[in-house]
Amino acid sequence: MMRYIARRVGQGLLVLFVLESLTFFLVRALPGNPFLGERKLPEHVLSQLNSLYGLDAGLWEQFSRYWKAILLHGDFGPSLVREGIQVSEIIAQAFPVSFELGCLAMLLAVVVGIPAGMVAAYRCNTRTDTLLMLSAVAGVCIPSFVLAPVLGITLGAHVPGLSVAGWDNSLCILLPAVTLGLVNAAYVARLTRAGMVETLASDFVRTARAKGAGPRRILWVHALRSGLLPAVSYMGPAFAALITGSFVVESCFQVPGMGLHFVNATTDRDYFLIQGLVFCYGVLIVAANLAVDICQAWLNPRLRS
Picture 1 (tube, one colour):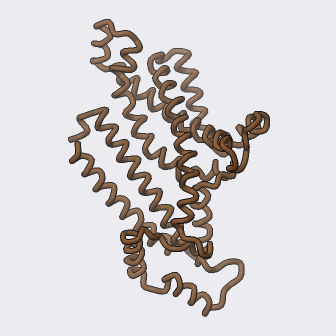
Picture 2 (picture 1 turned 30 degrees about the vertical axis):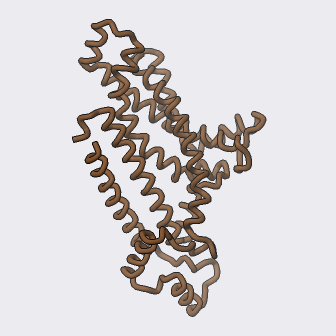
Picture 3 (picture 1 turned 135 degrees about the vertical axis):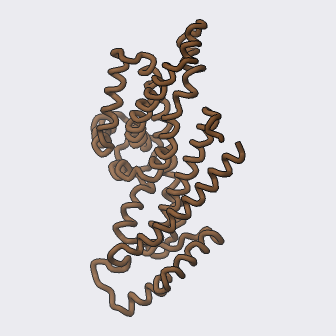
């Protein structure tokens, strides 16, 4: 098992290096300049700014400096647009907000999606199955930018204590978490149903039924471990995406998380901020996939080889 984990960690580090290196070169290939705003700067001022931030050096020299700063000091550099603010400070302020929102949304997706998928699989081809899967399809089809205003109008405007914008009290997290959680719960429910239907048709489940095992024991003891494999595979990348990529929901509810920084940094061509956010996103993806690999190896020992 330890060899399996070590191999996955090595692969994850390689993926992280390639991802960040590609981002470094791609952002510098973007047209325009981070210092070119509404008013064009004089050439000598632009030259001084490039020198100040080290952008006047050769591309490979910038590349080596960037990785050296990360590996030795954990420094992603300053924001090119927000004067006097380090990229690490922006991430440190936004990450806890997005992490809290992502955790609650994923918890809701698991609590709602897995039981719904299990019930639909056990009641396969019945009205219960049809109703649950129609709800899941609706959840998949309805985009978050449509669901967010609907929840804001129907719940936020009428339920006391709920807030439709801002992040100034403990209840502000509920509506954006429900918006993200319901969309992901639909995917989890469909994947859980697919895995459970296949598992419930297996020989060992039929043997358990023949021996007199009850419905609960069949579901929770015999079928659940193998039936959850498709849903578990989805949860890792989905969790990372919830934390860093929920910029639509964060925009709708004015949540000060990491999602908005992705869009703003790309629009402003803030090289260092883009690279820092991609690095953070990559770390989350690698960590989430590693957790998924470990869970899958525990659920299915044949995957450890």
